[in-house]
Image (tube, rainbow, N blue to C red):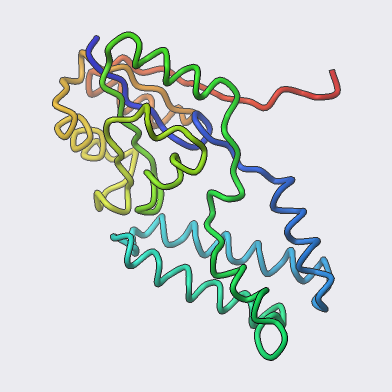
Length: 209
């Protein structure tokens, strides 16, 4: 085994629903109310997912433009733009989706273990171009040799080409590469290509136990 290719969401980082809800509460007190704020943020999330699905944003520059447009739209819908609300509008423009995600339990230990074994490590994710930035925000980028975002590649998993492009960039053959993903469909495709693929599910420990 010479390398490892990992999915990001569900393996290395997870959605932080608590942080997102707290932010909605903070914004709701400025007039829109919690129900409307949650609805507006939910629409924004759907818009992000659609942009990723359709591979509309291909570069970091295009992503920055997309975020500015989306932030302005959210600010207007929540009544957070205009006189006296400049700081709130600026805060919205500074947001990125990965600010509302958390490092998955065991993620850093997993990456460290792979590097200690001398493996090349790549992350292949259906996401916006800021894949490296998202991992850097959570302190995981130093363990990764290659960052492969679907929007940058122009092709998304489970398309076999996404895996092949990542392997070629890393200089790895399928049979010498471990693959971990929380989506069984992606794991099946990787396995059919010859990677040593397994379903991997990172979960947040139940604090009630």
